[in-house]
Amino acid sequence: MRISWTSITIPALVILSLWLMDGLVNDWGRLSGGGKNLIRFFNESLWPPDWSVLEPQAYPVCTAYPLVDFTCSTAWIGMTETIKIAFISTVFGVMISLPISILASRNLNPGFVTFPTRFLLAACRSLPSIIWAIFFVILVGFGPLSGILAMTIYTVGYLGKLQYESIEGMSNIPLESADSMGLSKVEKAIGVVIPEQANNLISQAVFMFEYNVRHGTVIGIVGAGGIGYYINLYLKFLQYDKVFAYLIIIFFVVIVIDFISIYTRSFFNEEGDINPPKWISVLIPQWIIESRSN
Image 1 (cartoon, helix red, strand yellow):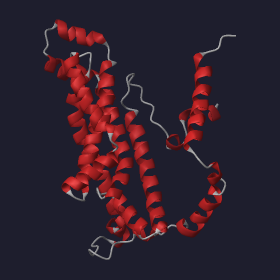
Image 2 (tube, one colour; image 1 turned 90 degrees about the horizontal axis):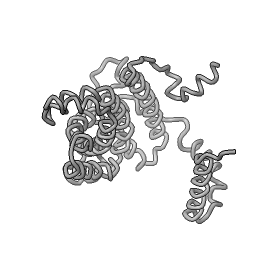
Image 3 (cartoon, helix red, strand yellow; image 1 turned 180 degrees about the vertical axis):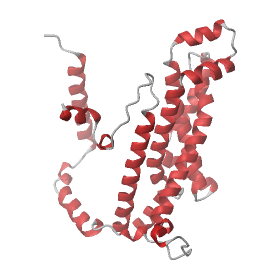
Image 4 (cartoon, helix red, strand yellow; image 1 turned 135 degrees about the vertical axis):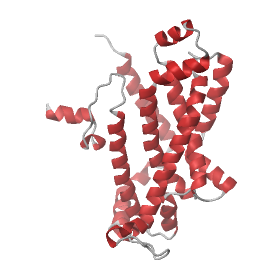
């Protein structure tokens, strides 16, 4: 019987991970009471969640109609600010990363051009967005501007890598045709590369927006704007029931954005086949749904 590399590699990696983990964890006994502590913390501090975070703030005075006065609440203000930060940073990140990723593509440029541009992209994504947020909070102060700058830089690094890998994976036939026509590098990038990779680039941008919304809830904890600011505020006052309410709101907002992202990206694929997903596919993998239906 022939043994595949997969059947050997996966168990070996699992054994190696367990061995490394055993060297990092000094006291496995701490796990024994973890479940009880979690249940006690949940019952005493988290449940029920305090939905007063959806009530309008006392100041400034809310001028919205009673049915929509939740738009004056900290939860609404913080979540909408997070989405705005994610949208702005995604748009700026796409605009900046696209020309850099074209320069970083080895099938378009020589090594002395691709190496420094790849180094630049690696530097941008080497630090998590929350570290960039701390840096910009020190540089420009608290507020959404720090969050926009931090997430834009990280978006450039992360999205730029996805883009140049996608460009390098495209067929050589259009590029060779462009060379035979005598097109310049700029003309080839604008007239050939971007149209050929448009579906992938749009799909990556939508995914990056989804990613930025999730991480935008974190950078606010260090003062870079968004709903994370309010989470950090109530954590300091040990009001965990309000924090739990924020987390539930974030969860449902992210689920909705995930579905919109998956639905939008279903219209941009190489084959052009459109198969809009169902809501349940956001929570359960598609292959499980298909196996149960069969």
